Length: 541
Image (cartoon, rainbow, N blue to C red; front, side, top):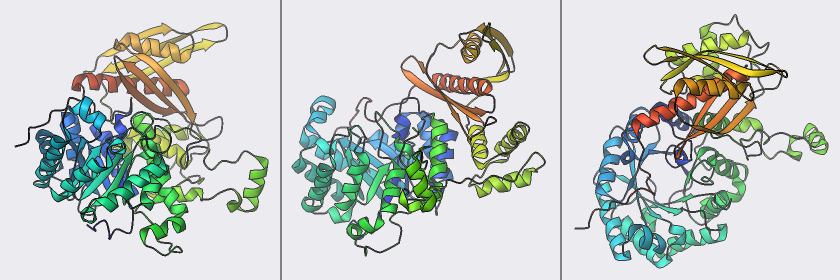
């Protein structure tokens, strides 16, 4: 690995599967994490933070399987998070064993407010713990990352001391987190500059940054950090994460892609250089965004930069006229650069499985035989309902079928009766995992409400529906509709997603999808949160 002074490109560290999954309702199962990890590898991220292995058996398994199946010799570095404790670091080391390029990321808070109220430790104790635990992590892997949590609110002189000791103990990456999204770009840039100027051995490590978007400044903070010497950016797809989320990967990558002539000199390059500043394949951005949105249930707002539905849409007549005359009048990047396409596929109801598989490969989807069979059947059904099937329809089918949620309940049949002079009534037939068939009916304020009430009568799992959203995949009266819901059970939120040309059917499947997630979570139990969980710190010898 190049040292800090040698690094002339930006390392992209994706924490969608760790920090991003901490978004309320964004919980993913092992197979879903693996699906996203494979796409992140295709996207070209340098490091995948696959999870927090000590949190739960499920998190451990997810990190282990990603390390084994995605962390190949030619693949990305696979990282596991660990608090500065022996048990956390040991769990991370064990989970990462199959990876060709493993990294342990350990952290401890350094701000006075965290030391006093969370850790209840002195600065001297924290320095000793950081030094000892970095060395302990180094005994398992060569690549160790250390983070002083809440660095943005830490005393600079104390921060310099902790970082110097961590690097001396073996840390190869030093991550500076703006844990609560408090700093402004000028302040964050000054923190990075101060570290470069005041940590004597900083050239032996890569400076990384991690930040939250509480004030809407995360991306701006990161770009300022790059100008001041940061060479690794820790971000998430669609900017998902706790509270207001993390810095958005797609915004950072495209900002440096579109404005590379501006950023080139900060990386020691000639301003006119056309070489990419990251290893990201930008044509995979939109696909990755859609996949993460569908699997987590976290919708992307239409006006979201880069990947929002309106990002390349022009409503104003003046803008439309300008774009028709020359795209550069109102577009600073081409939609195809992020993987958007208006292509219509030539497949139809007479197309065979091989042609279907080939088209999916062209779109970047590699499906296992079982997933391909399910997707192909859905494609054939769609051909009976639509005259034209687009690439976006195919993506909706694949994303829908690739969600590996344990099916305790499976919808066999749904029938609705409604009208302006009728009481909406729904009948559902469901099958349980052991083959038992259950039927019930209910009256609701509308057809979807009736369906959900009937399903609730069958499953008997208390829950509160808190969000219901329908989006059209394409234009036209025969378009597929994607339904995303979020429901609350006790203090946890679960999401569900489904796509169908019939909105009622999609709504039913999305609801059952969420209920199956809820039930699976009840079986597994809760996971430990890396920052909010009880701090169990080993005494320093």
